[in-house]
Length: 534
Image (cartoon, rainbow, N blue to C red):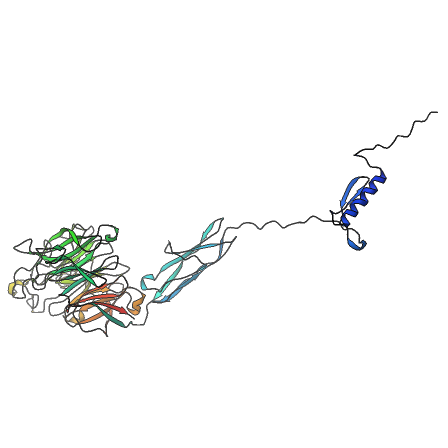
């Protein structure tokens, strides 16, 4: 029986003998002990489970894979605590805050009545000092991150009136003027002012430049004249002046028309350096002027003459009755009226006039003050009465002020003007607002306790710096040389009256709010004041 030879072990790179495998394992362990890579257990040349070689003969431990937690999910912002309503008195601040969660970083943008507030980008927001116009303002915040954004609910700021009355201090900005009549401010803070018998000038950094009027002005008005109470009166700046039209407006007595002469509204264009006027355009030329004296006063009496732009963007023009009995109720003529016109002098829409479409209200005596209530924009006039009943009146489009000084049937008055006596058979004084004859006449909110003391200019005070007087009407009473502060209810009726103390007794001809929030005044003594609430 033959036997086959025993097969020989294969040699080469892919096969190990037991002796070779043992040697290989020893070399790996020695390398690991020397600081090399961890040894691998090998059986007959095949890698097994990884092991760690420990010192001092400890048994090797199995290395487990490192398990890292998954990254947190990216989450859009969510508001967990909404802003709460806040209350502040005039001059104080309100604070709103929000709590939100979501993947950081979170961004915040606060809004007031839906409009973004500059630099309000924190989780809380504190308002500036509040005024009455801030009452009811709605505050909210948008919270955002890289995933999305969410808007909070709106929170309300309630502003309560202050009980603190401001003390006033006065600085004389200019003196030695000739019968200053009115003031207005340009967007850069320069002050325009009129002098009844000289014209329009500008005050900048203490220097005066004459712009329009008599000789010496950059633009001479050869038709301007000064007589009695008349001359150059009101001045107003176009709301779009800063936008490029550079228009200003003045009210003046003019002899460009004769028999009779007239009052008119003139539009001017100021140069870029504000040192000259040009481009004269007479936009209203037929305002009644008292050309001849009569039993009740000299020529030039009762011309009105205040100019103000309303928040509606239209120009309001006040006129006087000229001591003419029929003029205030005559809807074909412009005396004893308040006009409302465009910058070109045409009738503004919405006047609701029963006569000349430029007429906004009629039946007035001699309006020398008009201003607009903050928040509502409603115009209020102030005018002096005929020996009684100075009035402040809230106006409505097409309204009748109720002044009708012509004699009633059976009554005779000199020059047919019964303004200072009685136009009635029973002899009662002619009413400033005749509600018996005109039941729907506009009711005055104040009548100076039945007195006539030359009430003229007026303006609303606005802002937290005025404390308890924020939103109240300041009225200059020229004859009594005082400044009254009137509190009005929501209907415009006077609820309280106080008289300012601490100012010199002067006839205040003009009252204007300045861009700095202070009050500016022109006096018949030739001064311009800045009045600051402290």
